[in-house]
Length: 171
Image (cartoon, rainbow, N blue to C red; front, side, top):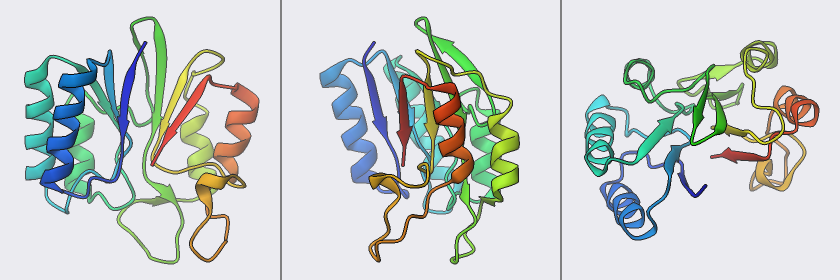
């Protein structure tokens, strides 16, 4: 299967256009959206989901730590949100978790490591599956801040080591 994966659009119209152009050119089996889609408003995400829906490509999303509650609720109720869920697309299990671990920035949607572990415990994305997460696991290149600090999630790292999904898509 071929996936188009993207994250952190933050309401940018150019990013929306890029996704639609890439989807038309590459013809993915599904589009995976790893959070921080909005600029703070639901309108952009509604428009994005409508535009992707018109392409007839399957797509799935999780919210990011900067997506406000209204956006989180829209994603969850859209039929495309997979935070805390596992679905099967083309024979591949895709599981999702949104938000982020606690940050010093007090963003819109942050979870304690215990809360992250609790959500992950409901997911089934074992070997061969894909985990769609807004945040990275702790202790890898993907979680390094500009200051060189590892800012990922210990619970996510433990989950990946235990479940061994085929791929992790994160923001």
